[in-house]
Length: 159
Image: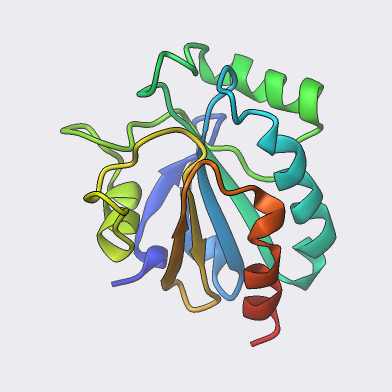
């Protein structure tokens, strides 16, 4: 099993297959608009612009499970990301990343790369790096800045 076995809903409610991202390096992030790490959107967009032509994608999944930091509906989230950060990478529908209603994709991501203290995601802007073959390579804490992941992205692109 790999990441391409999953389907997800985009921010507009359309069902999309993860197969669409085959042969690309992915950085999958649970995001929120009212988080202390929200400014990471800027660096995520910068990385996306720098490497998208080399086969890199950022995939953002809004989540409201941590401190009510993503209370808005999908259409407002989309507008916030576009207006405030010029986001052009794919944003998906708001999901749960932990618990009984957790999204199957995130259940898989967490099973492949456990956190320091168990599987659960502890906060928004947890990042999962996926190679071109759909294998989850690394998990990064919310405090890890996107620019600090750039070297790993470059290495995977060049493999």
